[in-house]
Length: 103
Image (cartoon, rainbow, N blue to C red; front, side, top):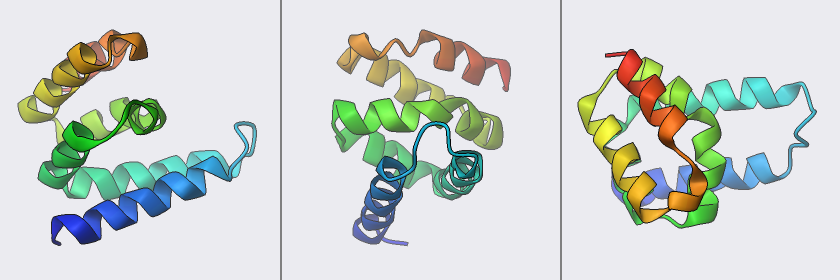
């Protein structure tokens, strides 16, 4: 999959997430599908995260642990560490520690 197609799909996931209430039971199914999609395309996911804004990082950070468990990747951890520096207000330390525990 090329980056532009991937980015469009991620943006569609984000738009869908914004339409799901936090207390909706369907949210868990949505997160599983989104995490599976992102984990299947690790390199493109990292590229997207490096290029995206704080709002998208905040939304996707809700499933960083799920992605980390699936990819078990040092590169993904390095991406999270870079995001922590870029967006210190997002408090990603817990996600980084969880990602490290899966390796």
